[in-house]
Length: 274
Image (cartoon, rainbow, N blue to C red):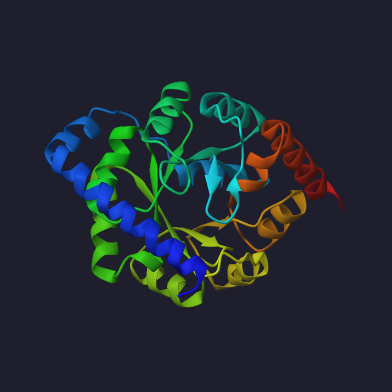
């Protein structure tokens, strides 16, 4: 295996180990009780389509580290960052909860939910079991990221069914035309295309742009990874995307909120140009 594939295999092994321990501690029924007490769910797809009428929705990602980029921020105050990015114009936030490789915490999602009760929150993790979908709702998520490459057809269907039952939206991530066709056939209507190859960690935003023409009508489309400025946001909008999930470039910025606000201003100016 390649070094990147080795890292992915370790992440999945660690996640399965943590999942087994968590399921032993917390019965599904208890999770479902906590989840259903959460009340209102904010629509991620609704937020994206509302913004995309005149621009591009940005899902700003809160992450301290990544396997490909290492430590992204030495000072990581999740509440301060969430408030800053929401004020700057993010239409939603993605919160990393994977501990071992991304230094995420379940508590981050709880904190951001308490701070921003009306902003759509996406839980970003390696979700491999319907139990985790219910856990996501209990933690305050409005949507979950599902990676098509990690889920066979039966498990994808089970995860989608759990999300629907829990009242969550599922943003299903693909990496190419074959995966796109597969998830569309499963009835998915909120799809993200990741510019990062999980087996090499290489970025190729061109592949995301090129795939924009392959989407059927009625699908809400999100470009993931590889965005480093307003020009990339404009390329995604021109390719038919409703939103972009942006993490590393913002987290590396000294002032993520100012950076995002500047990008959105530049995009708005470019869209108004004749």
